Length: 423
Image (cartoon, rainbow, N blue to C red):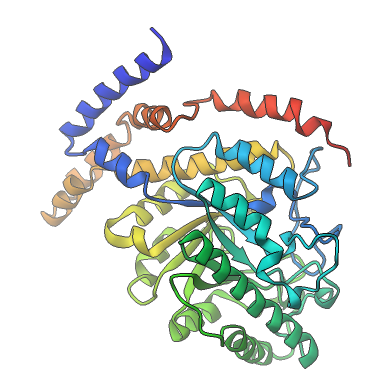
């Protein structure tokens, strides 16, 4: 029996099994195929960008590992993304940072960036039918060396970063217009202090004013959606972070912005999944940056663990899908970088499939009837339903390798392409 026949037979049995639980696998697969996931371009080069910076100064970030063969310029980075995308089922986008501008060898300051500096990304994405997302880069720059940007006491430095944020919004709108799909331009800053500050209020007052200036120019929501992202702490900001969760919840609510929840930016025992249904009734939408924190915000590749499954279940529920944007936000240099993209994206989509295959109607009926026993027992039994057979069929019809077969393609690409890179 060849693999295609085996997968089809296994799927036919799985489809019957799920139908007994009131689940339509074809409807689940159709819903799954309408959820795009944005891949972080920075996974391919360890957040180096194209400005020539050798470190992440003033960022509070750290990239673990030093595997040879990181992408050194746009053509290599896009080639690596092409290899990853060829192994992924479903629709995708690509998430850019400002440091991935291509300026033709002429230095361009960040406050002077224009849409033309991302034209190669725009054309590449257009040829592949991909949407693009955008992030200003408020780190790895001389004017961020002390870890302060939009909260800086120096008005001149704040104005520089305000101009940078505004420029990135215009770039985002241009990318969204070209793609026919709104670009999410997400603002995250590293600003904070290693120890207890003398004044907690003043930096946040400056941040509120700076953000208002960044967002002052009206842009079409069909082209650009603004998002703000909080953080619990970072390297060098253990004592205080200006852009905390509470600050950005209040800001997003009052300014009608998307709120970005990064799964690594919270206490390790805090449930990001639980925040979704609490926030969505009051916000225009959410952006989820999905990574895996291990004891701290370490941006590991997402694993198919309970936290990811819970997050996906909240995303997939009811009408929430249309109001939530999904992006990966890991950077891992200790394993094959292309494999990190593929594994992270496949795990997120597997979690979404598990959520869509969950017998929600049956479980909600038990809950409505006050049947706590049936709710618990059936929920546990449903975990053994054969979702792996449905996943393999999804990969088959999507034209990508099912199961573990994709790793061979990644290893061949590393051997034939990545291993030949120098530096």
